[in-house]
Amino acid sequence: MLIVMNAEPGLSKAKCDALLDDVRRTLQECGLADARIVGRIVGQDHYIVTMVKETLFF
Image (cartoon, rainbow, N blue to C red; front, side, top):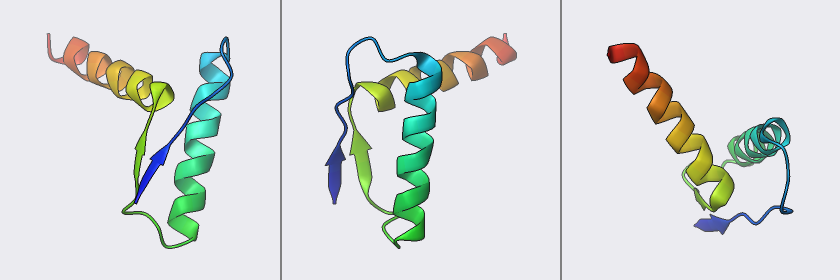
């Protein structure tokens, strides 16, 4: 299953993070942990997590 997330423009990073966490938790609780989530919020989360990891290595 593929879930496309669209959020309101201008939503703060904290609110985007909370929304993504809530969606992931809800999918886990419903037995849909294998579902793929796409969208700007997911891309930003992946980018930030990757940059933090890479910064720690260098």
